[in-house]
Amino acid sequence: MAPEIKKPLRLGVNIDHIATIRNARGGAHPDPVRAAELVACAGADGITAHLREDRRHIVDDDMRRLKEEIDLPLNFEMAATAEMLQLVSDVKPHGCCLVPENRKERTTEGGLDVAGQHNFIAPFVRELTDIGARVSLFVDPETSQIEAAKSTGAPVIEIHTGAYYEATAATDPARISAEFEKIKSAAELADSIGLEVHAGHGLTFWNVQPVAAIPQIVELNIGHFLVGEAVFMGLGEAVKEMKRLMQDARTGAHY
Ligand code: PXP
Image (cartoon, rainbow, N blue to C red):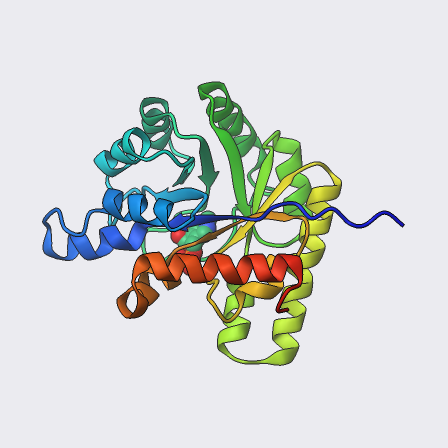
């Protein structure tokens, strides 16, 4: 039998919380664009930033500067609103990841309901595609959502790994295994129908390797943990260690 060809696995670093710290004092420091330069030097493959309606962390000017000053692909995370569409046409990021947004949430709490909102999301995907953005839909690992995502014409899904994170945080082996199996099956299904598969939310040094070993997943987007760990080991070192764990899991070296 021919050996399985493993697709490379990219790390997209979400720098939102560099902006959260900056905004706590209202000044210019720490600058998320400087953080993006640093993570690029440390081996990140892309930069992700979520421009929320309330601008609680990343602001419009950050997006413009990230696009102009950083060589890595920019993944513009956003809600499907007319305001964001206008900004995407100004900034022209490499990709857009559509997420649900709820004003009261601390962070993105669930995947998009693509199945329930297909008639709204599909034309929005077309508009983003016409602007030149590669569109990704952030969805829970559920068959109906993945099939609906495919039918919008979006080329990419990002599987929401939040429930897996919750299970790992609760150190509940049965839950961890059940949530992991959902991610694995979702990745297999999505890949089999021609979608590019990304994953993210709540990934850490301690739970990333099983997800990184799923061969259909080609990109992980990780933010909160890396920025938190930067306090202890520095942002560049945290990115390097995350990439090492991802690559080892991918090649089966230490996993
Ligand atoms: N992917 C998406 C679509 C997200 O909304 C987030 C959180 O902003 C992430 C990845 C990164 O999650 P975390 O910050 O928990 O690593």
